Length: 400
Image (tube, rainbow, N blue to C red; front, side):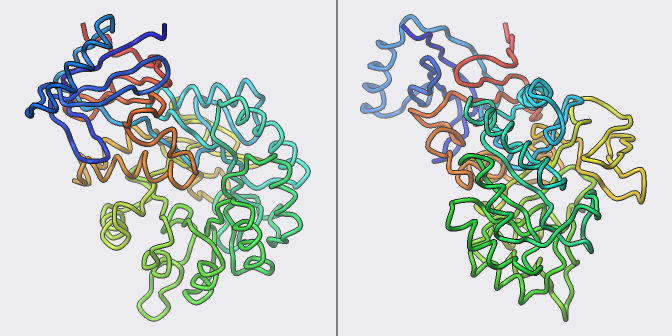
């Protein structure tokens, strides 16, 4: 018989709202049920008694005073724990995945950076095997199809226009595990590449772009659905030339990625995005590189050297921001305690919205019966205290 656990007494964030003094019942790898700990109506009482009869042998964990939220879903992540998804071995990739799991990310897409096409094809093969094994949720290609004007921490000599033939080559190399491609859609072949990606069920993300407002609108109409780390690596919002930011915020078909680490975005910019896009169209990401969960020092991001000091990653040559050292538990805590966002909106941004975009919301992204038992336990100050993935504690809360 599958092991059973009852997590009782927490403030549980469900798709329907926040349940005080609630509980989540786990059976094996799945969520068996969710309910208030003290039902008010006769029908709820009868259902609870029937549930209790089924789970008399369950291990009960008292999580009173804590928040219970779905496991986090990171759709844009380059590594962590000192390991790179772009250039590391299989063991390196798994080390990075484990590092982020310790911080609540139970579902993760591995992102590459710009490289030689043959190398990216090889990486796609390696990462797709890990996706097939269930270690990662898929592959995101950030580059090489991006603008040299907005290259950020990408090697300019390896950039190229988004030729649909080459885009297709990467998709095929990922063997059905490609989830997203970031590209500058204003470049030659950009619109055709967006259409190709849409036809193959791969997210076309607009990013590292120098597009005008009009060019961005055209890309959205062609099938682009995500803004890669909105505000970063794109022209700023202008009152005469609004650029891509205005086009991406105003269109309901676009979900905007945001890096809430206090470095990539001013709080006012984050509030602007939430106000105009709405909570249902925001996905918090880490854009993490090797130093996430590891520490300051020198690292390589693709072929470029990065210096991490005080948790901020910058290219040694030129000083551009080079990804982040963020983990999603820190983003969650900051979003609530510093930015003042409602807890339900933050849960949507770190779990439900990215799960829906990635097409895995039938299994993860919310606390609902039948879904994977991926849970994060937070204390009253929203600091991480426990992580469960598929019914097993990754971080045991040891609450006594």
